[in-house]
Length: 463
Image 1 (cartoon, rainbow, N blue to C red):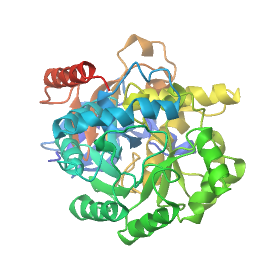
Image 2 (cartoon, rainbow, N blue to C red; image 1 turned 135 degrees about the horizontal axis):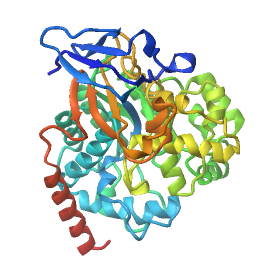
Image 3 (cartoon, rainbow, N blue to C red; image 1 turned 180 degrees about the vertical axis):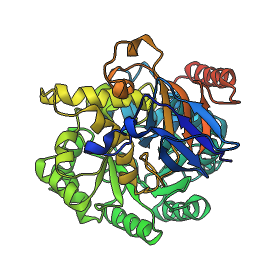
């Protein structure tokens, strides 16, 4: 249930908007009134009867981060020694593929999802898109319902990016039964079922479903890709997948399909404003321009791309071409964390290094792509910015840590200073879901215990 709130006296407010609108003019009043789950007023405001006041003195306020690509089940697969120093393709064969056998029980998936959502919440993230591909024909539990349930308990907006595959990659030797492909008709039927049960396409919805075959060039046949696209559009849901994460994607498309990945996707109806891809590290200028022309978006995952040595996505060039750009953490098995503020810090740093240009991207732009950019990319138009009438999804960051002492521009502290942030409050849909750095009523010690027990079990039964 939402309660009337008033955020009072913030030191700065970043709106999530682009350009000159990125910062709220505090001189005209930075108080934010929240009513019925939405931002009702901004300015110099007084408390109304029965409203709760959150004192934001010396704090900065951002829109809640929007994480547009994750693999929550990987939250129990952090730092696995067999994969810690591998690039993407050998890492896939060493970690996500063989370790899926440990998710034959619902508890493991639920605990993993809980870890990821909790970590994201504590970094100020209020909307999560989980590219969930742990499905197979004989799965003994309802994986979609499980992740939606965990998100609802913790009060976040949640989009299920329903992944899967119709065939295995040749390089994956002796995969466990939990990796068994689903026939196309089964995938289509199950996506339709999840859409009927969970999807709400309205601007202020808390739950969405997206059709998200795991990789368009490897996880299904080309004609199946076209059928998946048409099926999704008949259901009025969006499309998502991985693309061009490493140069292997580009080489495969050229050798097998005699085209580029973007042109391949275009041929099979996988471009458009209802489509976004994770990574897109290796794009030509022509591909970037085609994404801008078709409004095909990107989930930018800089930490995972660095960790797997995949490269750096050409985000500054994509922004110039009007490509919808968002921010995401990817799976914790290739990131070892799920912290949107740290992801934003990396995005602010890595493009300067890649382009050898200190003006390649600024903090305001990083905040924009991590908030309103995510809403635009996913077509979730009621969220992503601090404006009257928008959803009350906000993070109030305390600047009491020494890393912020001495800042001349406190507004950008959570991005430029790095490290873990301290959330005085995180609000989603008008509800306080984090207070003074903790989730009210949540048993963190139990989560720690459950995670250790499951990891110990995996270590005791090596793949």
